Length: 74
Image (cartoon, rainbow, N blue to C red; front, side):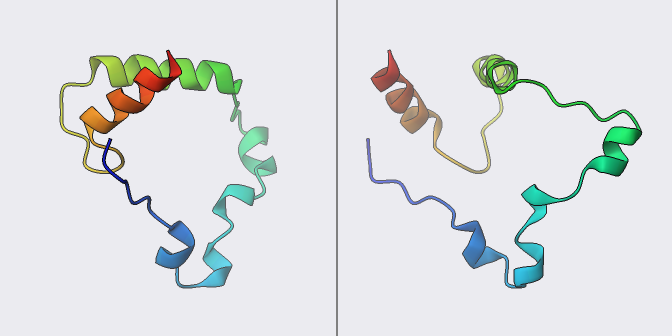
């Protein structure tokens, strides 16, 4: 597998005030019905999507690099 550069989001987001989206207060959204699901379910759904995806991914690992990486997990 070739060396891979990963995106450094903190370098892309110039305004420090915008860097904490993942820590946003979700109380209002939850009050209106937002629900979260366990990570295991999220990962399973993502894997299911990735295995049936037929379009080229525009960001992230190439398909071949991802398959190489997944092969290391088996």
